[in-house]
Image 1 (tube, rainbow, N blue to C red):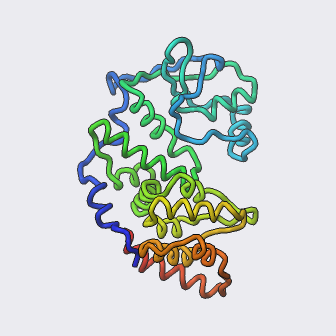
Image 2 (spheres, rainbow, N blue to C red):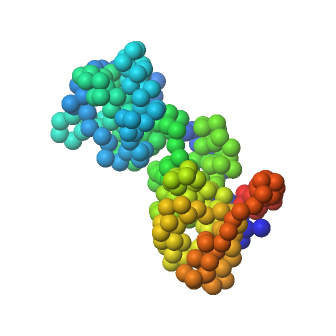
Image 3 (cartoon, rainbow, N blue to C red):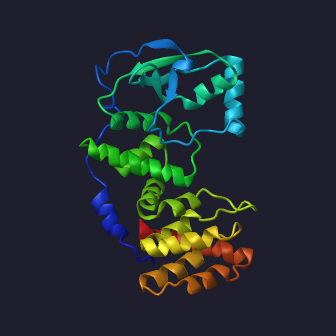
Length: 287
């Protein structure tokens, strides 16, 4: 059974209050219909607080979007707000604007919105884009965490249940992602999304959960060790060994290297059995 205090995490971070997601972000009459206008691309600028990674033009999903816009045009307007000075900041629609620029399209349909503050603009960015992006676990974890922080700063509570319902995902998945973002340093959080040259994930989320008990110094030590070898990954069993040493304050660089360098070869049957045991017994301790 894992040792970190997940019960305390649940009790302190999940509100039972019901909050309507995203209905309160904008100023003005909620019943008014948004007006669409055409804006020139040279008037549009990236929103400085945009939380999503911008896509490479060569990625398959961007190529699909470029092909769609080339054949059918922009199917839905982008969302912008007026920029200090001239122009507009893109709240939602960065990829559509990016594709239009690639195609030398000069104008794009847009809805101009107003926000009481930057935090509300960031929330609209999150809610407007979260179902449109194929996000890696580390990126998604940061977004869930940011979403809840910003809602709380606005004096509102958003529950795990509400996030899960709005995204069509399991509550356990949401809770796990938020916990990873809250407990892992930025380097290890990035490792959740990094692949080795052979295509293996450097830090699987199940192993990431195990090392959330490590302190700052221990996490930095582990990050450095994982970065030292492009093919090095952290398995669930190695993560458990590292967690145990960390809890007892016995983790040293030498012991860490011994664990990471140890052979991990197992039969396929053993691998499968281990995964089942972890899902049913170990995860129940987290959630």
